[in-house]
Length: 298
Image (cartoon, rainbow, N blue to C red; front, side):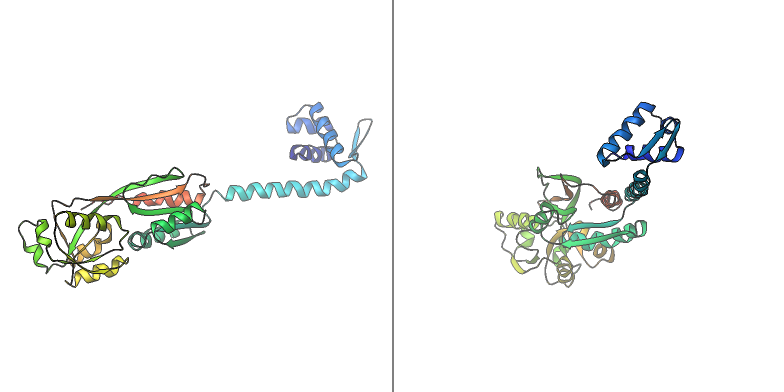
């Protein structure tokens, strides 16, 4: 049953004329006649009495008119609902590394919620492997990670931005007093590291090991906030992305140790699945991100 046939039916019922209905709807009279024949065939009944120049609804036509009005009202409501759906609303599910979440999300979500209060943001924190599974099984809409450049044939990369990896020390650490820091400066130093599947941690350790520099590992932990507290206490050194230490650098509680042999840049990357429908909420969130990702590396 075609909507246009029902619209023609209602217009004829309103005007009591096939020719007037055709003119009002921009059809030829023959087209309108064919539409009503199709409708009557589908319903198995005659909808109009056409006696002379008079066109009136049959009893069954009057019964159908009630339901036809409900059908067209429902169609109009559906169109309105879809039009309103262009305004960001509903849920957006974001999978993100903990360090990225702590650094960026409070400011981003604050601005995003003020602009789009009808959107409910759901954050899922996990490792890259965990978040990859969630993206591939449609349990999250976006994946935000930090690593070497990643390529996946099933994913669309929306953003990729660089960030410097930094060696960190407390201001009181003697290594900062050296005029020129070299790899030998780290001999027998104590470190607190992120977990052992972390790319930048592994890159730094490989540099020390390949240069035969002995060092001590005090602790391994995935929480960058805890790592920064231990570094600021003067107990140990660490290696973290620049984006995680902006506050500490401003306060002077942590300083960056400059080592010419260690110039490592890794990349924040935001993905969605290639088969994912990009909802208005997702579009709005992705439009918000560049406002927060333009900070230069130190």
